[in-house]
Length: 611
Ligand code: G6P
Picture: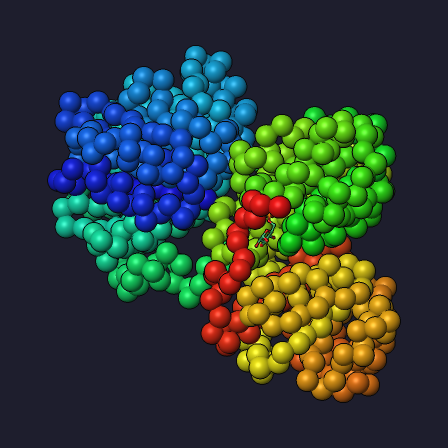
């Protein structure tokens, strides 16, 4: 995600920037940095690896003087989270600086082009490319308008997502910002102005703000802000008043981080796919590092929600790549004396990259000479070091202890992986992949549609929040969704919820059903639909209430279920991505009804670093 803050005005910039970064640290904490234009018109950059506190210690209270500056707190996507890769990044001569939040997809080709023109790069980041691109466009020009134009021309060459802020030594009162798919807001003061990724950074200084929209560029001086689109057409926008307090602002106005993160899911899916779909092909260059000709089997190893993503991953890999795959809980895998050799691919999934059991399984795989592929969210985390290949979720930090948006990102990335493996094994013709890729591209909008129905789900949750026991059942692709739905509910509402294969219910758990035990049945369209309807009948015969997750347009289900949580129609292998959303919302609203500590549930930790 990354946090950006900028200041132009009569006050010393550094304390304002550092304070803003503190309020944005939730957006990333791999490294932090500031750049200040000193009164001698020199750009001074101070940056360190790690949290903002490391930067504050390094500065020891002595910050560069100056009234124009930028700050950045990083959530790494390209390049290790070290000091060199920390933002701000400068051009060749140190005459301009940029900070960036997002991903520049075509940074490789842009960098090659710039190198050929003599530009010298110091970091591995995609961001540094922007600094040199602006330098190239600004060369020989002067004046504030020319700098804004240079930024605009540079951005027209970049593909991907960005919130960007920049200034140059020639213009001591000019801050330029731009946005495409990453947030950016302007704070309007009196004789001073601010730029930030998010409102919390502005709150101590002003309550007047302007939103910068996608595809816009903004120039700030002490007097005000001007906005243009990337074609250079001026845009007028009315400021708005910020009514939030600090806590509400950090959560983007949502009552909990969990809900905020659920509402980020459409964007998270887009980010997981970003740069990885090329027309009718999946592009995962990371997988080049594996010798696929040798691989005969895959183990998928993970804990918690990541394990449930792994269960879906197993099916995806078998479906699209026809590679035998097994998904195993890490704490079991490591002690099961698994058969591992160079022909067995071990796929490890971990949001944090620090889960002790998953790390132990990773070490076991490496010692056995098995190739390893890691799916992780946190760049540079322990599990990513020494892996043969790493696929990042690109989902940004997840603050709520229970996983929501990263589960969807895992499913999206595992789908891409399965398709990529299928392509490489020569099993998938372009014509087969094309409709799947189209559906993947449409998923963000479909998740949005589920979110539009949140109020109806809240209403259902209210009616069932006083029950003590729940069952979640599903078959086939729906089975992992049932497990994850039950896990979400028990984690945050402390209610007993059991996920079960629907066909297995009659072999025991059905004895527990009575009118007080609601059953959430996953009933998405597919060849097993009639089977799940039969299982629902078994449940109803015990007078248990049935809640169903079903696809829009399914009239049949309304005859069988007491309540329906609707999702849009999609391809069967993608249905777990959509089914997760109403189940997350259901768990959320039940927990809220019960007054639980949703973001920090008792006894749970975001990352479990002990065995
Ligand atoms: C903890 C968290 C879960 C998470 C699991 C695995 O139990 O509370 O939300 O799914 O760890 O974490 P990982 O970071 O390895 O995905």
